[in-house]
Amino acid sequence: MTDNRWADYCRQLLQAAQDVLSFTDGMTKADFLTDRRTQNAVVMSLLVIGEVAARVAEHHPEKVSQYPEVPWKSMRGMRNRIAHGYFDIDFGVVWQTASVAIPELLVTIDTIIHREGGSDA
Image (cartoon, rainbow, N blue to C red; front, side, top):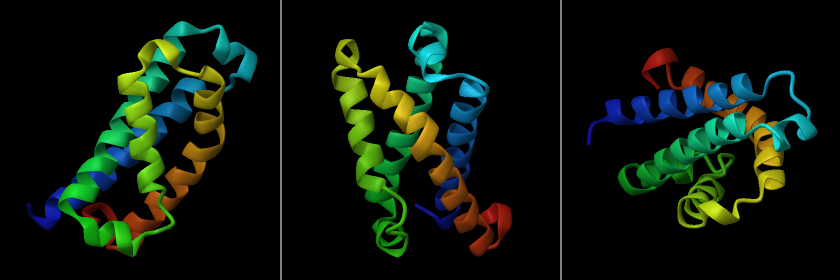
């Protein structure tokens, strides 16, 4: 794996987080809980985020150590819960993740990208 994969992973995390915020823009929790299309879109983006976190852990463990402010383990855990328990997803937890954790992740990943030299993280 080259360092370019790390930059790709950062861009993928950024895009998936931006997608979540775009999908839920202007929604309330009540709106979200009754909108299956948005629920599915957000869940797919959370799967992407978790998969990228798993790949970072596998291919760039030094980045996991370097950036402990990124919830790598939680992102992988959310992905695993969604992927292996699809019919038992708690959309209240998904909403909380989308409305609180994802904006924080977006800021953190954006900061990392800029700290490491812009678009070539």
